[in-house]
Image 1 (cartoon, rainbow, N blue to C red):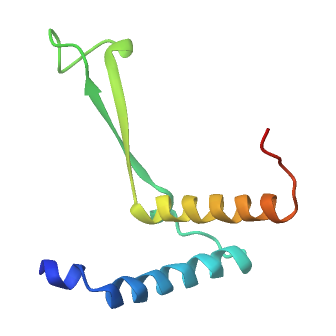
Image 2: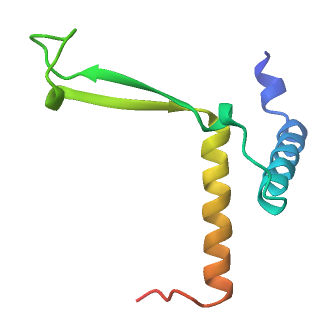
Length: 94
């Protein structure tokens, strides 16, 4: 895919509209979010230089690789919740 194609603002505007439409459908119609979007792959990475293939538990860092749609969904929900809290003056900054 060419870089100039990815830099086209019309492409991103169209994609954003389609993604937001689907999010609104899930949210408003309480449609079930597909399982393939909620799944992630957990990858253990060893911090033990002496035994990198079979490290003890405390010497392992786990990284979860998730679908990018999941992160967008999370950000959308956070934005909606924040908007609701601000509009209804539920939480006040100290």
